[in-house]
Image (tube, rainbow, N blue to C red; front, side, top):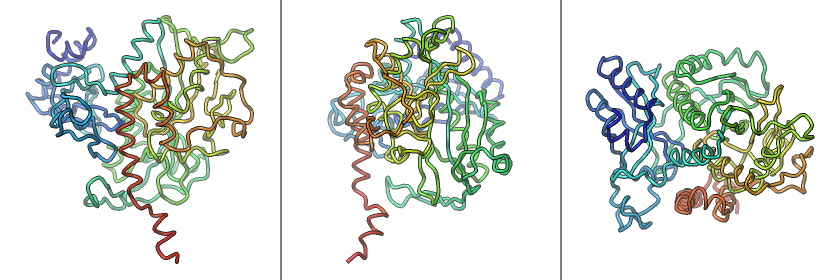
Amino acid sequence: MSGSRMARLGGWDDAADEAAGRIAGRLESGAIDRLRYAWVDQHGIVRGKTLFGDRARAALDDGLNIVGTTMLKDTSDMTAWPVFEPGAGFGSRSFEGASDLCLVPDPTTYVELPWSPGTGWVLCQAHLSDGRPAPFDSRALLRRVLAELDARGWQARMGLEVEFHVFRLVDEPPQAAALGRPVAPAVTLLNPGYRLLTEQRFDALEPVIELVRKPLLELGLPIESAEIELGPSQVEFVFSHSPALMAADRMVLFRHATKQILRRHGYLASFMCLPNLPGLMASGWHLHQSLTDARGSNLFAAGPDDGHPLSVLGQSYLGGLLSHAEASCAFSTPTINGYRRFRPNALAPDRICWGRDNRGAMLRVVTGSSPGQTRIENRAGEPAANPYLSFAAQLVAGIDGIDRGADPGEAVDRPYGAELRCLPRSLDGALDALAADPAFARDFGREFIDYYLHVKRAELARFRGEVTPWEHREYFDMV
């Protein structure tokens, strides 16, 4: 397959070519009879097509087409540009008329889905119909940032702590109330919450957790623990560190698998930060990050006489994360809802600071029991974020800090102190910071930043155009 069009467009190496051969063999032998070609859009939503038989096999060589407006939609699937106008409304002939994108598979991401026998699944990246990489593909953007790291002889490693809610489904809405306005399904809680890490709460939820734990292990996801969080129906899964692209792919697969498996059993897994149900606690996504050299040595680890938990390089990386914290929130906390989590004294940050093993700080420096475990934990993310954009934003901010020799200042012991810079209070504030940040314009590209700002501001415009339940309750019979 090394001579196929997909191999050329995807830049397949020997490992990818061998993986493609194995997938073809599974299809030809009948071990699987369908292949889901999956692509992650700008919001982290997994889209794609399921192909059968000869067509599933042929797409390994030829790719498959998907409507290009999937790359131009906000979170409700409303297309944010007038694609039937010349230049699709933003000077691009490639997206005119809702024309096609070509999905190019990465065979090394292939897995077989334990909950759907006979089904294979492979991640793809989007190219334009003429074969050029699509300009707004988030996985391709992360790969480009990682290639720049690789040129310096460095590798990024990421560890995931993901909080989310699991509910029992009571009723599935038969249809949306109106185009672009989905109706949330009715659910009930699985536990009353407020017993953090208790054995009794875990035992009660273990049958539900086991529904997903075993299939996730079969998929090769490195689960370290499943834990009971503080809020009602809230749990956390922790995954060991892995190279950044692999970790991002795993986050996609984890969310995708968890939602599908639990839905088949009558449950709903929600990665929304703070659902509108009484008594719930907001969910976060704590991202652990470090850089290693070509031998795998941790570049953040300090020497025994350094007097700081991080090396000089690690301190500058930390300084970069602090410098670009407001702008990077546009990627780590990309929903309107996610900013409800930034509250003081709630195991969540609301100010821009770092601390030594301090869970109130936005950036928690953890040294562990050995130098190899030294890392920076960013606690500002939400579990609905697109992992490719979130990771790329962290790396761009950190590397800019290294290049500038950024000083992170002193660790704080009052992470909610009034003298500290605040995290953005809304998505609007994060987008304004992103628009003004030169490092992201340089490394993501101005074209991508303008695109992302447009699609997120279209989402905000829809939000502002609706009457909220609060307004109706407050003013409907006021005078």
